[in-house]
Length: 227
Ligand SMILES: [Zn+2]
Image (cartoon, rainbow, N blue to C red; front, side):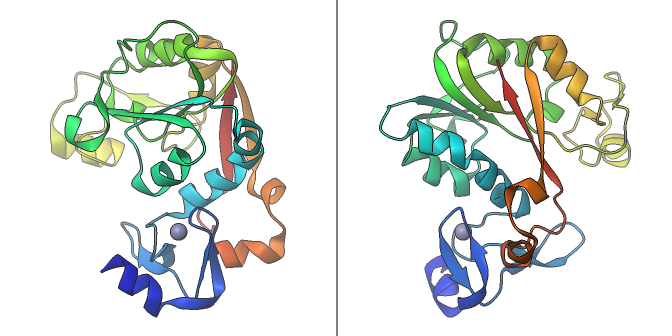
């Protein structure tokens, strides 16, 4: 089905860097329906395509070095692309969704095991997010990098862990299974764990002419962490 869809939409005008294919258009998507959101071949969204551009320098460097990458709650579109470049392990609380079941608040690996970690849109589900961050920091090599992104609104994080009602969580935090709404002060949580945070603007990753082709309208930046 997906292959047929990608075949029908092949053409010029839009490009997905994750699966390296050209299309006449992307599929619409998003909670509030927007055009040109999802890649018809690999299902990448805007944030996956922008992240993929930001990761290119590290991926090129890691190629053939057999670097180890830990992918938490793996997004299928970038999982298949990362598998080709790394000694790859995906983990999730749900064993059906990854190669190994794992709670990232207790990672069963020694210190400095991984060269790279991708853990996006995960921490907003975890009450003890600082414990998860400390564990991710611990298992990352000193030369390593991590993509730890969360949905953010405004400057300040809104959090009240006593709120468990799904409707109230949806109203306050955007989804019934979100335990907080991060703001841009998420940077302080990363830095207090020890990570050095680099915020890369979309304009640093691609020429304005290419932005339309990649359809990255709703994304503005990528955060990357180093140890
Ligand atoms: Zn794609």
